[in-house]
Amino acid sequence: MHSQNEKKPRIVVADDHPEVTKTLTKILNADFELVGCAKNGLEAIGAIAQFQPDVLVTDIEMPMMDGIHAARHLRRINCAVKIVFISASSDTEIAGLAISSEASGFVLKSRMATDLVHAIREALAGRQFVSETVDAIVPCSQPWRPSEATEAVTR
Image (cartoon, rainbow, N blue to C red; front, side, top):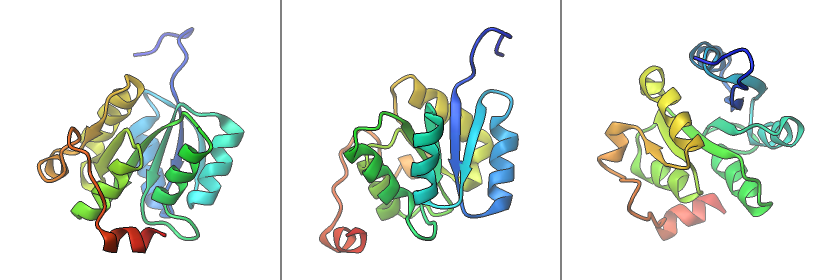
């Protein structure tokens, strides 16, 4: 898909499960340049500073710092990296938190093989993508506001 002279978009992946990272590498390798991997949000922030990727593909639930807090930190420091969340959970509160953190995408891990490359391409084009089964519950076009209980959890 990419010619020798055409640069592939650069990706950093953050997930605390090695098997998921291995799967992500297989899915992304043909179309993107995987420049860094992280096991938590803190490592992801460091990898972004070091490698300056176009997109961060990050799990939400990780030790030390979760993906949502990492995304909020990146936005606070005006980092322009596109963020695509991956999650095993289709919980609407989790999806809503991800979308409200200025994410470009939310992909269920069960749909990575079919949705992830498309989600990244949409992010790079300045659009937002949400996996179909979550999109029916939390549409992208509708602003999501966390409940007071959810806000308390994320502080």
